[in-house]
Image 1: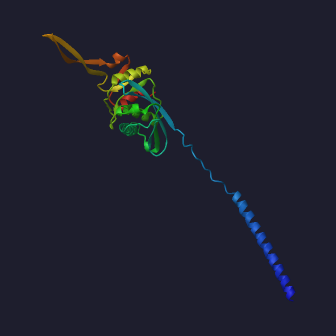
Image 2 (image 1 turned 135 degrees about the vertical axis):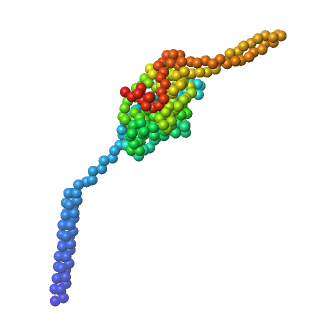
Image 3 (image 1 turned 120 degrees about the vertical axis):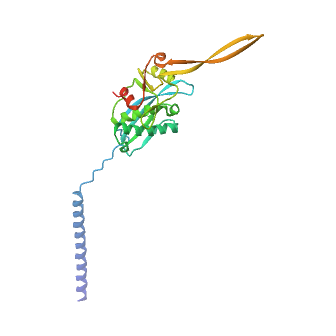
Amino acid sequence: MKKYQNHSYKVFLGLLLIGIIIGFSIGYFTFYESKKNIPSPLIITPPSNQIYYQTKVNLVAVDQNGNGVITPLIVEIKPGNGKALTNVDKLLFWVDTQQSIQIAKAVAENVTGINASNYDLTYTIESNASLIGGPSAGAALTIATVAALEKKTLKSDVMITGTINPDGTIGEVGGVLEKAKAAKEEGAKLFLVPSGQGQQTYLQPVENCVRKLGFIFCETTYKQITVNIGKDVGISVIEVKNINDALKYFIM
């Protein structure tokens, strides 16, 4: 009787083991088939370097030797969260130039009515950034920002110098004559300057010498000279008061 009970117990264990294996197999295949029917989530990752739009303008500056120079600037715009970024080979963007970028962005928003907080703007200097010290590129920065926001192209034969004020007016700068010469050499047909700076006045030293009692006595006086920049350089020069005035000549 005891031997029969042991045999029955073994048979029971065998059947239980087989049942466990069959149950596990059914559960696994059911899970596998149901998993196959679940659609995979669609993940779209936009490329980080995708440019929504870009525009180019030439900045006119004066180098350390007092010569006018041209520095290309590219403004790129793409969806973002309102960042204003600079991209230069030599990170010498001066503090006042960075401030000009912030003012340019604010003025461009007012002019276009476009909320730039939905975009990232990147300002790229294509040559030595040390030439962009000072706020005199403010007007050009604003015009390029407006063109980027509105996805418009700027004329390459028009250049401008002038600071930018928060109300959109264009302020006076130095070295206009030297900048006009550089603009003409670069192929510009029209050079925009702040109001009142179409002419440049400077003092020319004049030395008068006389001989008295065997000695030469010299006196230096200064003569005021006024130069019409357009005529002197041979380029069309137009004075502009604000960004809206300037945009009429830039936008294609």
